[in-house]
Length: 68
Image (cartoon, rainbow, N blue to C red; front, top):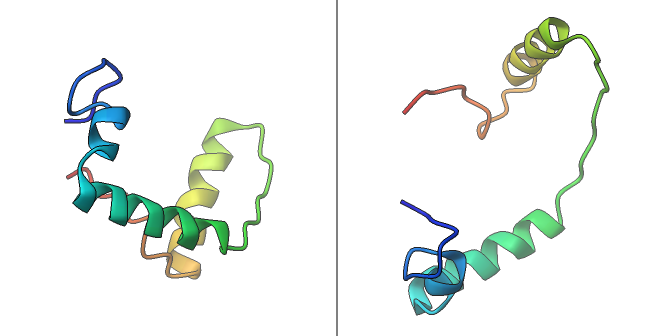
């Protein structure tokens, strides 16, 4: 599990792992190229509904609401 404490599972520690660092850098580059949009909803119930609706309507693969 990731940690914010200074140890090997902290971000600094993980960045010392070449395999993790490579994947992390690739992910950052991918995110940098993404287009972002947002809809502001102050009501938490409407916000939750919209998140679920948009994930279904737009078939967003990274927003699956799986509880793992």
